[in-house]
Length: 248
Length: 248
Image (tube, rainbow over all chains, first blue to last red; front, side, top):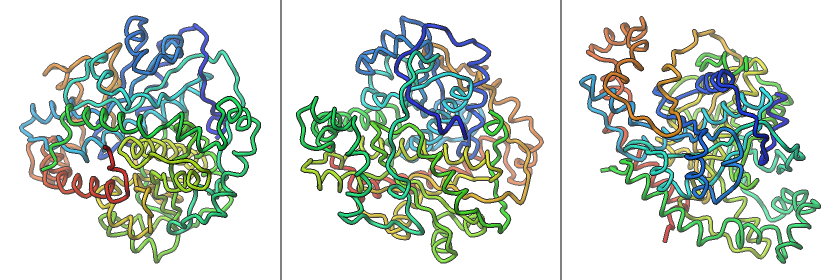
């Protein structure tokens, strides 16, 4: 469990390329992940060329690691391949609906996490980009994703050029419930967030942003309602355009 | 990468319980997974009692491993805890929309896969249950999930009482694309599915089900349009009821 426990998101990379055979080994380990009914309704787009990475860059809010990391992996829900197979085998696919999209998303995310762990076990660093769903419509264009394919998450990968501290996590008891959900009292919430709020990092953030509480940094700056509404619209529209909203 | 490569879904379990401290270690490793903005917008419900497992059983189409495995883990997208925290910290949360739901789902699935790998590294077996989204409305009731919480996937866990063969996977080249998506020709599809279609297991399935092609077993029996439409409706309704569809 060493690789799991030593995970850090890496945002600065050496220019050293990833050996082709190592990348293949990592992807091979990745696709051993559980997949719904063994359908493997996902695809992995491996982008290395500066040309395509430059096009992806604004989709990921110009985070430089997109062009600096040697490899960018876009994990997609993909029923296109499966639907084509059905079409060639006298079978009528019924996968143009929301649950099928979500099945593909689950598949894509389990593979993504396997790939990340395999990469870290081999001395590589990774960082997930949460921006993929926010600009899914533009990523569809850049990566030429056909109907039946929706981008779910992106991982940059390469040899780390930094060694950041381990990030804090809430206490385990704060995210685990026994038997059924045990809802939180005001006191529970205070206790769960106490350590996070007392960190030096938090104090620095409050000063830098002129905010009174850490929660306000999330609601007012990092993950605002206005952004969330825009991104919800973009992502739902993309899911529909890619053919997954025929729910009747 | 040994644990990744030796993954099999385990459907038969010994009654041996999982030691409490081992389970905690596994969950601790799990929550080291990447999480959006370090918000940890997920919860893990650990169910061990026969009483609650019996209630979950029909939600998972009466698959006996739900009651036979010592531990059932339900991974949920969870903004309830985060929203409560915001409310206690003079912050106005804007997380009652689809993108926030999906953010929580990503978080939950990355943690789930980390937990599974940690379990397998410790000699335990796991199986994902795809039924969670299909009966999300009933799972909400059984596990008493408040607004802001949606069940995403379920994992049963315990000591294996079987040692199944490794499951087949499509060739890596069939699920990986270079630079941008390379759409499949008819010949590509034939080649990608060739090995799978020639397996002894496939021949057995065709005979048992009286079908001409493997694809028909998926479209006509396992993942039918009628089921998908029903499950899409249930899951979308649950997402809405749990407060994640205020997208305007």
